[in-house]
Image 1 (cartoon, rainbow, N blue to C red):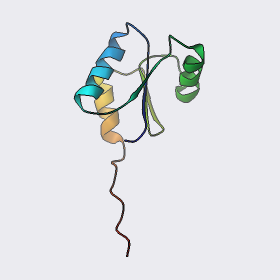
Image 2 (image 1 turned 120 degrees about the vertical axis):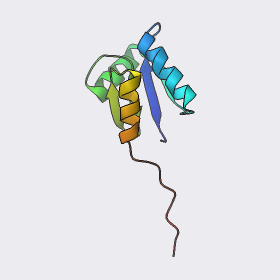
Image 3 (image 1 turned 180 degrees about the vertical axis):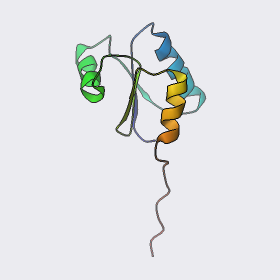
Length: 88
């Protein structure tokens, strides 16, 4: 995973759980609080097609309105990073 963004709002318990999960699994992410800036809320809506938090975007793959169980399932379906192929 190279580009991980988590759209959140303050005092959102699902957002706190998602952040705790990502931290516990050493997954670096950029947190974007959509409650602080209307433009970021619009960005989240454009990317995900909805207005619920948390919304996770990983390398262009989107999971919206998630809980930890959905987060685990989503991460398991993502392509695994592969080391570069050796050159001949």
